[in-house]
Image (tube, rainbow, N blue to C red; front, top):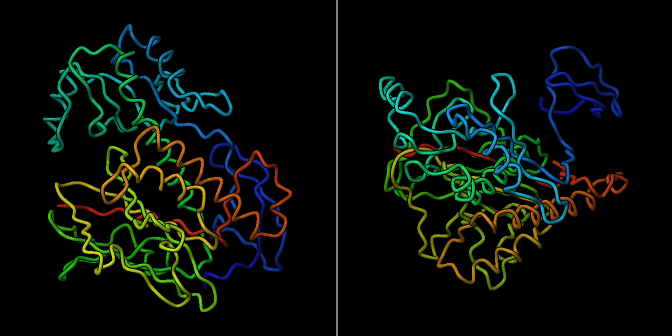
Length: 364
């Protein structure tokens, strides 16, 4: 029935096995019951795990050293990259390696249809060793040069990792919505709401290249207004803020009144959200009971040099993430009894005050 019967606090974890204790509720907890994260604490220095592949040969040690010093947090002085050689057992978010002629031929023979990096270029790969779009450089590039070139993209990928982790947090906010095509065509419910809960086997129609999309977000709460922000993230990690886009008064623009909905982009603005090419995009909506004041202020500064929607670059992305997590923490501590006692070095995200939806769409 989606009604919680008890609350459990996680006290320890070893890989995929966690130990918790019941802190409230009278329900009988039995094996097989589902758990939902509702209150999450984030460490103050989130890290992106990068593995260094043996395709770099004698340059592996140089690559590990260059990556380890590439992204150092100004506030903590600690690296925001956790780097190690690929050993076949350690899990990584991305792999740093060289596209060899043999591996390129192997991917081509397997029918890999995406654009492949040229042989002897250094690139980022997924944990399954699929090339990350737009991450390769010139042929015979040095590893140090490649690390310097990839710094902005690594920052974006770190931000995306943190936001995606937060999108797994269950929220009790009365929010729903869909992505649809102007003039008719396929539609897709936003993830996170009941209508957005779909099977992995569900057949989802892709959106055609050149389609103009709209995003509808409904606030079904009869009493409280909610604040909304919306980001679009491409496969290379590039983020674009598509809502709000009225930067004279961004807090007012982000507000959704009780029992109303907003459609992005608003038809009366004449703006278009047109998708092109082929591949996948991630649409991330963030709704909250309080204003994302710090993040909006930062975006307002970035928007001064942008025309229309606001692109968030590598250097800007880390500052944006810090402001966003600060806003999440402030909203959560003000909304939840007992959270004020949590150490201030931990960023708290409360699903009762914040809802983050991550919906992947295909463009064909």
